[in-house]
Image (cartoon, rainbow, N blue to C red):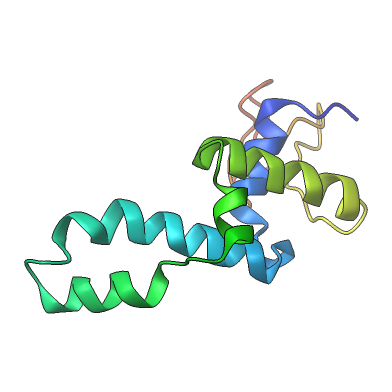
Length: 115
């Protein structure tokens, strides 16, 4: 099976139950940096969310060293390598292409509809 970008994107978006605790902390840190940092001094709620979700753990920061997109690709590749047989990937019954979402019922490749 090809490890194409669409499968990597699908896994990084919809297979969070396979993320490690460290990967979850890295994602929370990234969200805190992008969503809460700009507002942390203007609103106490954002300040608290920022403080609770940022990390100084060098292992967390190392995961994000090359940026969030690279982090997501690395996580998805790890999940693909370690859990491919367990993953419930939504594939087109006609061409076996990966659907856009876990609940999609129309193929983005061949147009097959399985509603």
